[in-house]
Amino acid sequence: MLKAKIFVRLKASVLDPQGKAVTQSLHQLGYQDVIDTRVSKYIELVLNETDPEKAKAEIDGICDKLLANPNTETYDFSLEQVEN
Amino acid sequence: MKISVITYPGSNCDADAREVFALRGHSVKAIWHKDHDLGSPDLLILPGGFSYGDYLRCGALAHTSPISAELISYAASGGMILGICNGFQILTELGLLPGALLMNAHLQFVCKHQHIRVESANSPFTFGLKPGTALDIPIAHKEGNYFIDPDGLKALQDEDRILFRYCNAEGIVSEEYNPNGAIDNIAGICSANRRILGMMPHPERACSPAVRNTDGLQIIEAVERYFESLA
Image (cartoon, rainbow over all chains, first blue to last red):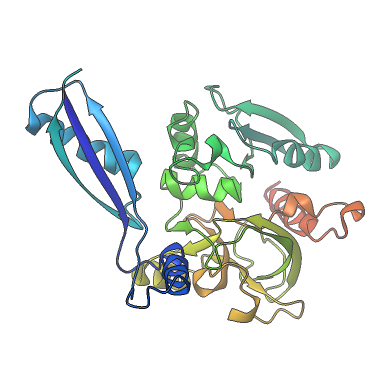
């Protein structure tokens, strides 16, 4: 089986108000050197598939159809072999 | 008119939408998201609420519902759809309207009366309304911050597809009266064929004197006028 570790991020051109709020909070905690924060989504899923090439094509489809919104988000992922 | 209202798990304005049209004498049908028949409506409503708990992204999981295949073919055949709040989010996730609804710029859920300005009478939903008219329509959302890339925005502007913008009681549109950070103060847009409207404000919540005002009726009356004009 293969585990996909998927990051779904807001495009650089899209404002991230959550990231801004986190930056402000970090400043309040004294971390004045933090100049930018972007909040992303991290999704793990396990495929009943052993061929990495097939898995890549499937994850691309999954991300394009559901996990990421192409209007506002980009995604990238890595695959690793896992046992049951 | 024949009205169908789809209920998704987590929809919570479906009964309000049905009641408003039923009280005006229209034939109203409730459609469950697992149904496969829309009931050949004159107008299909995707109501507000929190379909699938707003998990992943607002409206994203609703687009995988069994009814979506019928919904897409209904839209492709020129069917009329009104998506309110979560319904607007679902329409963008389905790809039936461009852009996306992001988290409000101030990160807070906003629930209040809000004026919106009619920008174009060129749609069944604003038929006979005077552009510039300010309507007082409630909003209630956390993800209503409309976003579209610059080319997409220009297309909406050039094609006169922005039907409502956030404004004040006098109909003045400015950033000051923008409740959520939406680009160009956009509160509602229509499809290229002008038969699909997505809007964040809730006209169905402003149709009785018991709920402060009846400005929402102006949108419903516009749709009624449109169908009368076809008769």
